[in-house]
Image (cartoon, rainbow, N blue to C red; front, side):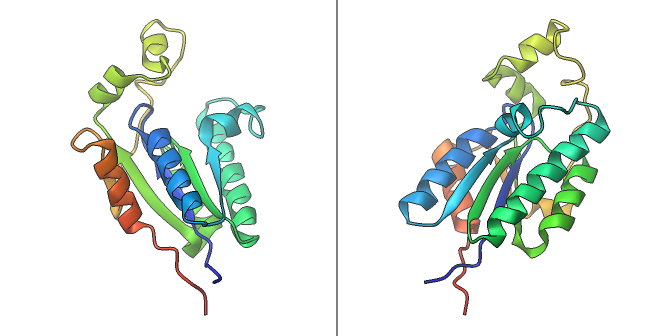
Length: 176
């Protein structure tokens, strides 16, 4: 059976649960025999995008590169799971323009206070110590309605409940 490849893009604040849920989705789909690849924002930033800083224009270029790679992979028949912060409308708008109908957004949401408590990478701790700039005060622009269709509130649900909600929204559609 042939599939119409999609790009499942999970975005939200650091500590919201993007990576946890992206890896669960990757494993679930792979277990079902769905051809896919996972693009992690941190890994992409340390490799393909290692020449970029964290200013707004550099973040935009970071997301452009990730979207272009995802588009190329989807065009080759792979589903792509992406997880990045994508805090600005401009980053999400550009990804949507590049990916078109292949793109399915998942807004992984938890309040900033919850993300700071979780702090799995110690980023918020370093930010409070002044070692990482602009993370806490960096504007996270609330998603627009199209990006909110698949909102996952990780502070209100278990990982399994969030995973099941994502799975319900993921439709690997057979092509004709």
